[in-house]
Image 1 (cartoon, rainbow, N blue to C red):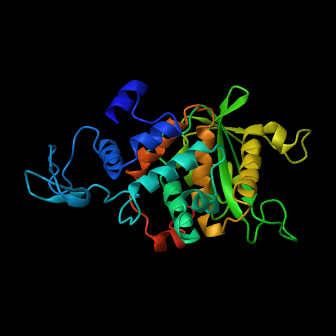
Image 2: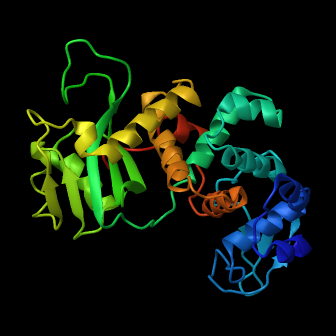
Image 3: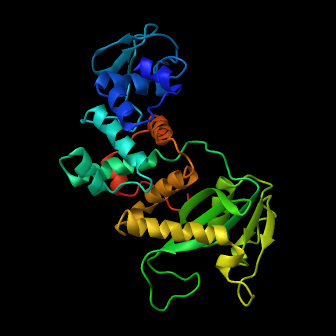
Length: 319
């Protein structure tokens, strides 16, 4: 594996053939996880000492200073897995190498997993790893608006909903194009919900472009420059004055209906928003192996997610 690494000049496989060679054995997979988790050397989970440990059976490292044991996969997406790590690495490769992703059914078929439930759980675990902890906030000028995910609701108009999910979309302006995006499901379109999203995702001092919805009125007090375009009654339509967020919203809905066949339950929508954001922000990357590497890096950083936690949705909306 070290020979392939030096030949490619980077610590990730460039092709499926390289991936298959690097991670053909459990040892190769464990070595990669170890490098990703402790790039500057093993750190004891008990005493914090950095140094070469004793390598015990089943991926357990014993600290030479305190004799404490640290599991290689504890505290990662792979914790408590009963499947070979190679199968997990194949799942990460297939997930990142397909431009629009794969469904749980597709993953089950390609990996020969015994049940749809296993494939569905794995996909959600990997989606949790698609959000980098401490990621940078958006900067410059950003368009922000809400969109609604779900079927039509009779008698509801404008921002009124009953069963649909509200998703806030933030899109950086990059010339005439779109830079990075952020998405979040919120419980309502109140000032509290919208400003909480903005504070978490946009750097103070940035210029935020919105429509005239009253909940955005507090942006200047919150430390942002606020550009307002009143759409109602104007000569231009919403998709014309804020084309970036509307383009992102349209692509999101097309992706949910296409790749996932619309089979997204409301309590799990957050995971799909994470995946869409991960893919959109890396849409210009020609190195699929680099996407695999980023996902693997984050898989060892986000922590485990038990099945029960995933099924329940695992998040507080608007938190």
